[in-house]
Length: 379
Figure 1 (tube, rainbow, N blue to C red):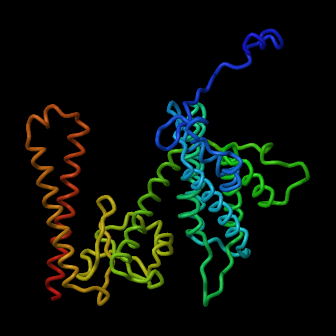
Figure 2 (figure 1 turned 90 degrees about the vertical axis):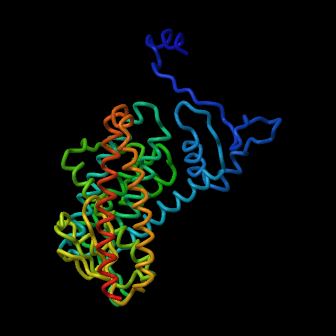
Figure 3 (figure 1 turned 180 degrees about the horizontal axis):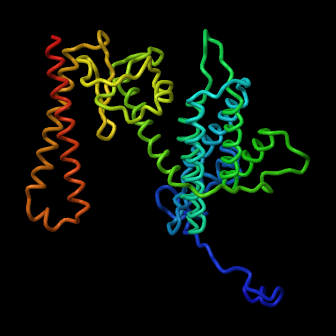
C-alpha cells in the first residue's frame, strides 16, 4: 500500500499502523471454527443492537492486549444505549419556563461545563495514543456517572403536591448543549443512536448530520480543576448523608438536618447539598448532637442528628465495633512506622502515606470516642 501510494499520489498514504491482538473467548481460547466459539455477528446485533455490539468489542479490546470477547460486554453496551435514550426522554419531557435560574442550576451548569472540558482533553490525549478502549470508557463514565447520576439530579425540577414543576430556560438550554456535546463525543463509538438523538435534540435542516458537526472545546483551566475537585467533595457529603439514611433505614423522602462541625468550607454549595441529600437545613456547630451519626469528608466532620430515629444501644454497639477496628488498624500503622528499616528504606511517598493513615485514623478514633461518650450520656 505504501508503494502504491507513492506510485499514484506521490506520497506515503499513512504513517501510523494500529495492530489489534488475537480475538479470544472469555476462557482465553483463540476463536476458531473448529472450536465453534465464534459468535454470529448478525445474531449479536439482533440481540444487543449494532451500537451495543460495537461498544462490547471496544470495551474488550484494550491497546496492546488480545481481545477477550464476552457477550456480557455487548449487554453492557445495550444497557448504555438504554441509559442514553432514557436520559434523552427525561430531558425532552421537562416543562420549561422563563423563570430565574436557581442556585443549584448555576452550580451544576458551571461544574458540568468544567467536567466536559476536562474529559474532552483526556479523550483527545487518549485518541492520540490510540487508546480507543480507554477513550470510550472515559466518555462512558462521563455520561453514566457524572451526567446521568449527578448533573441531571442536580437540575431536575422538583415535584410539588405530586405535580412536576418547570425548569428554568437558562438551565434547560445549557442541558441541551451538554447533551449535544456528549452525543458528539460518543459518536465515533456509537454512531447510530447518537445520530438519531442528535436529529431530535434540535430542529435540523435536510442533509444535516452529526458526522459533519464539529466538536471544539477549550482546554480546561485551573478554575475548572478546582471546581471539579470541590464538587467531588460535595458528592462525598451527599453520599455520606445517603449512607446514614441507608444504615438507619430512614426513608429518602424524610428530610434530615446536617451539622458541620467547626467550619463549613462548602457553604457555597449548600443549595446543591440540600437538594441532593434532601435536607431541611445545614448548620455549623461546635459540637455535634449526641444522637447524631457522623462521617468524615477529608478532615471535615459532618453529622446527621437522628433523635428518636435510632436505637441508642444498637448505635453504641455499632460504634464500639468500628472503634475497635480502627484501633487495630492504627496499631498496624504505628508498628510499621516504628520499624526503622521501613522508614529509612521505603520511598518517601510511601512513608508519607503511612503517616497520613496514622493521622486520619487518630482523628476518626477521637471523633468516635466523643460520639460514644455522648451516646452513653443519653442512656
